[in-house]
Amino acid sequence: MALFILFVGTVGFVFTRALGYDLSFAGIILIIAGVMTFGSYYFSDRIVLSTMKAHPVTLKSHPALYRIVENLSIGAGMPMPKLYITDDPAPNAFATGRDPKHGVVCVTTGLLELLNKSELEGVIAHELSHIRNYDTRVMGVIAILVGFIALMADLFMQHVWFGGGNRDEDRGGGQLQLILLVVGIILAILSPIAATIIQLAVSRKREYLADASGALLTRYPEGLASALEKLAADRRPTRGATNATAHLFIENPFAGKSRKAWFASLFDTHPPMEERIKILRSM
Image 1: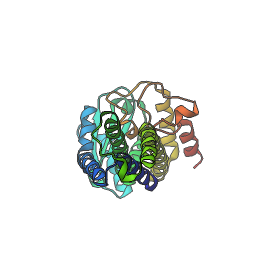
Image 2: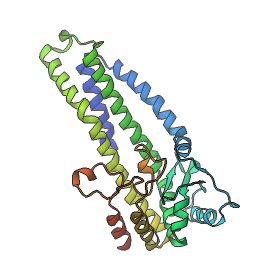
Image 3: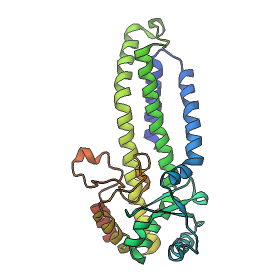
Image 4: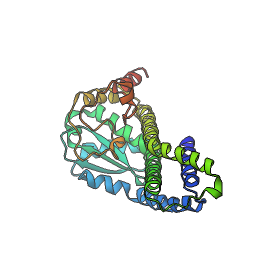
């Protein structure tokens, strides 16, 4: 996280100086990013639930699921999150919300049909761990930083190609300005890709942490391991999932989930399922 913020600051500084602006230009971008962050912080859960067409779960409508979430929340010492379900035959689940007091867990109908009680407990414990570990907040901040980098790169390239900059060679020296401009163009091309790779790397680390925390909560790692095996065997994509929300789910929500090439794995939102299962069964 610290390196990511440093990366964002460095890119912003190079873009600003390459265009010949003072740091007030970066301040304008920061204000825009602040508005984006505010919206994401307070309304991201509602947006995700809306895209998934999820509806609330009550004790009366799904008593078994409700009791599992309630009991595990008590065991974790956290408030029970709001519980939602979405009508989708593909088995999956996700958690969102800015903190444990505003946590949300959503499961698909396919998940309820596929898993037995101990497996479902493993999945719910995994999602509760995401909330308790503040993973949903961390990934929200990371997503904003990635968007911030993309915004800066886009504004920089618009100024380079369409003018409107404040570049004058007297302010920083013609040769230095040219070097900064070349570096800025290279960063504008590569920084969004690098930021996305960092985002996905953080997402994969948080999945490992949630697996471990979930196993600790249930005291039964095999339940989650068995659930992940069943999820990996199901090839159906999850409806409503997007590239922006894929990291929220317990497994990759898209079709064609098994990619073995090392370069392609850099862009995976989740660690290899086989590795997660192996770690759980070694506990």
